[in-house]
Length: 251
Ligand code: G
Ligand code: G
Ligand code: NA
Ligand code: MN
Image (cartoon, rainbow, N blue to C red; front, side, top):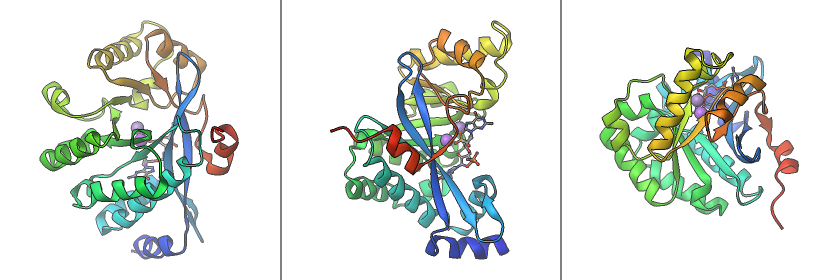
């Protein structure tokens, strides 16, 4: 396939770029960190969305070198920011099937010089269910090193409560499909958001709402004690050069 051929060349030609979307603490209003989101500037097709090329990268195994590039680039970028800002990175199932995952992450951390507790790895429920033994071992190891684990797109998968209880993670990211339904107070979507936030809180996890697009959604989430929020209403994903101004390295 053409996309596959182009993808093989793209890494060597540096056609990839990371954009960064802030996540914000709802009590203080301060930015806690940024999620790295991959962009591909295809020479003819223009900007290609990760939704299109990540599946191809997964099938072809190209996700391994690509994922490593993402890790190294994002950690190196975060090293330029204030030292309290976190960097969140999305991991795909194929990266967990690789034996190199932990050593790749350790090496990216060392090369960048950032503290391990600034790195947050976003994994979906699907990733976890896939090969739960291997994933569990890798995540436990990473967590012992101080790396934080976030459960991405929460509410869209099939993980059981007993599974969530055993699984080592620090943060629940409430999927934007729930957040987008929040319009009027105390309707069913509001009650679902409340329940998920309370669920996270009672497990001692940080709750983060994704895809916040309106002030009303933000108000409801704040009122329910959701810890963090992310979405176009706060900021779209932005270029690294823009962050440098927002998040100057502390003197
Ligand atoms: O940015 P956008 O909405 O197009 O992202 C679409 C999907 O691609 C999201 O599910 C997001 O998690 C995923 N994605 C974005 N960047 C990366 C990345 O660096 N690695 C992996 N594995 N997935 C990514
Ligand atoms: O699956 P994941 O949660 O990693 O997906 C992240 C994707 O969501 C990114 O591609 C980002 O561009 C997109 N995104 C971020 N904020 C919003 C938002 O407020 N609304 C919508 N529709 N998408 C968003
Ligand atoms: Na994500
Ligand atoms: Mn998500």
